[in-house]
Image 1 (cartoon, rainbow, N blue to C red):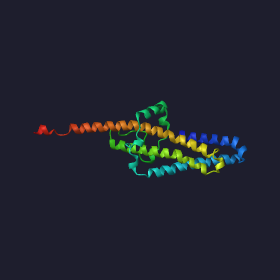
Image 2: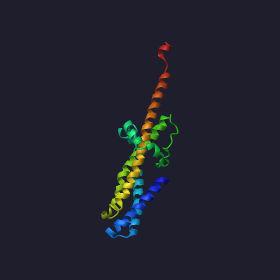
Image 3: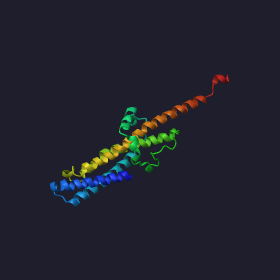
Image 4: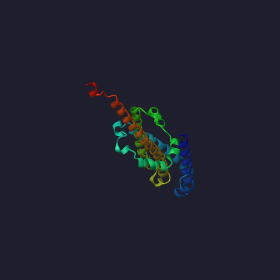
Amino acid sequence: MILYGIIILVCMALIALFNALFAVPMFGFSVLYAALATVILTAAVIALDGLFAFLVRRLPEKFFSHKRTFFTVSQKEKLRYEKLGIRKWKDKIPELGGFTGLRKNKIDRPYDNAYLSRYLTEACYGVMIHLVTVFTGYLIIFICPLRYWLCFGFPIATVNAVLNVLPIFVLRYNTYKLNVLYLRNERRNMRTQIDHTPDCNAVE
């Protein structure tokens, strides 16, 4: 969270500075207006993210099964994330699982498929929440006068989009590995059941 907070503050400062240097002479609003608009719209996009996260979280769990095609991650997709160096930076991305009672930065019970199933469901919720907020963040364009959309709304919403895309990459990357573990557990449990099944011929 600290890293994201620093990124947000730096981006706010850069947007406000850019507007003070270029938009103020062009549109005639004050430097104070540029600073306040940046702060207010940043707070607004964070509030929008929270609102839509709340709404998505109210949807039924059946829509967020890790077995659905939409949430399935192929090996090719996983390799693309690795080419982006995800192993080096994924642990720096904020993990907000504490709000749902299940933190997703550590696997506590890797051999328990009931636990993994819940973990994967929460990851699918997370993917959808971040995906939705990538786009809904652009609603802040309509809060300020539309003639200023390139000055405030668009750059702030774009920063928000990038900060939401990165967790999607991490969640989907982890989903691939967890699905492999889940299937491995299923096969092991199936073999155990077969081994413990009574041999009817032996009884005869």
